[in-house]
Length: 223
Length: 165
Image: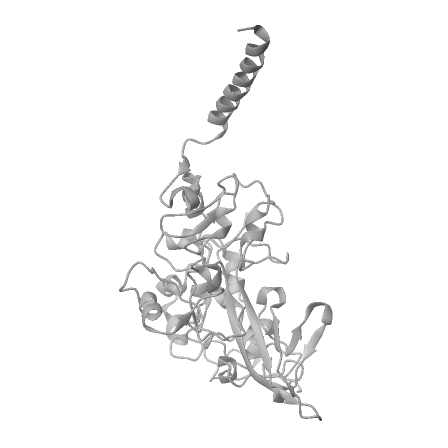
């Protein structure tokens, strides 16, 4: 994931939803894009420093992209920030990290979710009992319940495409090259070369999950 | 030993035995510990094949190019050349058999995904020409003036319509 390149068009989310039959209108998505708007700090009249704030939103998971300057702050309503007060703003695409140590798999009491030999974390829809432990166990919040099948759902890393040598639908849909997918076990893979030779970051490293989604150009505000 | 000692033991054995029998019937043969070991690899192996069977809908621009070389040449050198055909023309599914034709999304909403102006100077979005969707020809579809395959040209299919800003 290259945060510098993402413009928040949400074409990845649209492609994922169609490719994987994710319900279009239900508020669930396998991948989404978050907008981070960080405002400048200021001084009040007594000279005290008021730090800038970070506003984050992802309306409908950015299914329709970010077309409005208003930032969705849930019960606080839509917030419009004066352009002059914006210190920085960027878009962070998210999906299942396909962790090397997936906590969602550890907590499954029935063996419905598992990791394949090639490292992809999948859910067996016929075996899932819908207890929701994995939804709670994922530190990245990527799992949800299928609105009609009532089983745990998640990104499959387009297993049907990868196994045919294709790329994931989100990667193919991204016009800016912000999303890329590769085989990290192959040192000659172009994506592996970026991960091993450039400054990349992962999300919530402190959880010890060894996430396999790497971010270029990440920032301290990214959660 | 007396009967009252054996009797509950038989009942327990019968319960355990019946659970084991039901288990062999209900649990698929390929369910067990696989490559990733006890902690991560405990699953029904054939489910991997189930996920591989999901039909591919987005066939990528490479497939479009096989038949629509002219359209590919039209777009490849334009600023829109990096946008996959299926983002606007819709997923391929099994085109040209099913569906025979694809419905092109010419909505403003599609263009606005990138071209709605957001005042984020440091972001890559700032490098894309942006408009205020509430002010820029609100009643018109973008393709009425702009040629989507090459936005540097005006759309040859349409005369510039008489719309007021």
